[in-house]
Image (cartoon, rainbow, N blue to C red):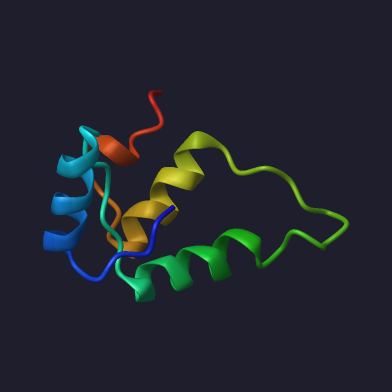
Length: 72
């Protein structure tokens, strides 16, 4: 993951390196994802999320589209 100033900066950065552009998340979305994703990791009853659960979490945070599909 790279932290870039804007979507324009991301486009310039990837173009300069000949790389395809992936998804763009705001800092707020990254924080919301991290908090939700790791909130229960220390719980002894922790279990890995299913693909469906992960995609539902992504959608809740606004992470939608083909990039976020887990290929079910």
